[in-house]
Length: 298
Image (cartoon, rainbow, N blue to C red; front, top):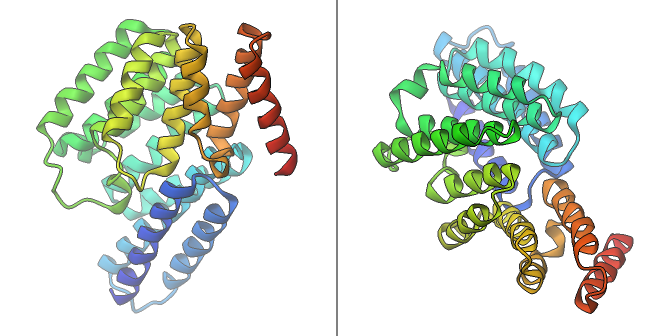
């Protein structure tokens, strides 16, 4: 159990690094190494069944963190390899919480692969776990993720229904109950972010902007990656409503060290749309040149 406690502390560090920096290869590689170290401990024949279960759960958590970092960084081939391993390890652990996490990340991977019905199928597996039935916080997160996937399929009614279920479950959840470190990110602010992403997928730009403002008002300061995501989504929502100056202000608030992974891809899409909608705006030309030069420096 001392090994379990030591590795659990390292998992907290991995989660915190991802919250700050997003899906860097450094986070992915470190999570991979820790998963291998954890599995090496399984080879000791003296470990009790309880310790083995904890070790499998931790190995699945590290591998799932590697999968998430790869997804966030756009390294989808690597993410698929991590997914296969994490699903196996989560099954061996018999831990419903880590099984929920793995299938939630699998849904995100399928979404980024454009396999939206597979993403919904992964949601179904997550919702079938006992932790979904026992803890309303997990239920809320599952419903919020499902809203995003319904948004990708342009099902407006299902998006609103899922967000409503997520909000109802969150209102019933005990935010102070003991949970794994990787669930600490989920609260009202995260529900607002997922709602923002779902409405953006639908093209409901006014609703998307409203969720962005609520997310930024509630977001904890240590969740730097999510703050950058909220700003780039808000910039796009404002741009689509014709508020070019406000959109540029939101985009400028994103630190340059966050211009990678999902944030970087969304920023590129924003720039493409910006130049299409306001090609003669001098501020737009200045911003476009600034971002082009910044990418050359990087």
